[in-house]
Amino acid sequence: MTNNAKYIIMILFLSSLLIQACKTQKLSKEDKEWQPYSKGDVLVFKSSYNKRDSIFIDKIESHSNPNDPLSTGKKKYEFLFVSGEITLQEPIKTKLGHTFDRERIDVLQMTLDDSHSYMKFVFSKKSDSLKYPTTVLSINELKEKIDGDSSVKIKAEEYYDLPFDYDLESFWWSKKYGYTRYEFKNGVYWELEKFIRKGMNILEE
Image 1: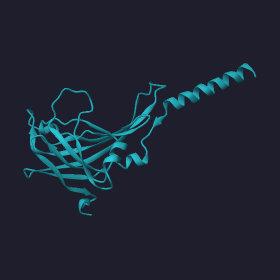
Image 2 (image 1 turned 180 degrees about the horizontal axis):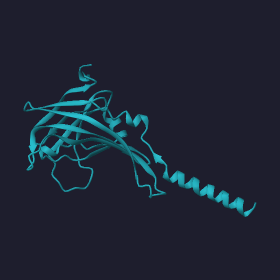
Image 3 (image 1 turned 30 degrees about the vertical axis):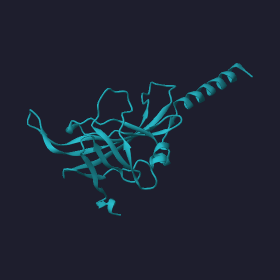
């Protein structure tokens, strides 16, 4: 074998290793079936004191991490982000006179590693000044808890090591409808009253 042939084989071998190292590991179709929302969905929650919040799902985005094009040799993983806007009970007026009646809200995230896929329950509302922990469960854990379209109560627990006392105590989750209820330590709760998709309330189906 000539030196040129050896050089070409070595280049091809190293290129193959680099391609494998940079390959993105993606969430499976089965994983994504645990993400119940579609762009355009409207979630209407009613509180225990008879107030309502409407959440408009307007973004469902997929990204890879790391996404730095200079970070060669690092394996990438797919991240899925669900977010939207929420109507404010009391519009916020800035010092410049601008009035805001909606705010951005993170709803849900999904990610994975070499062995498991995870749901990150990141729902929180900045405007109510309450503290919401980031609860993380693997898809396998959810499968053990949830049967069919039933809704199950999940204890809200901070995944990250942060020294805060959180206001959210628990939330109820359904594979079909997502968040169906969330409960606070002060006894207040919000319950899903309508799930509107393409003009229809699918909770009534």
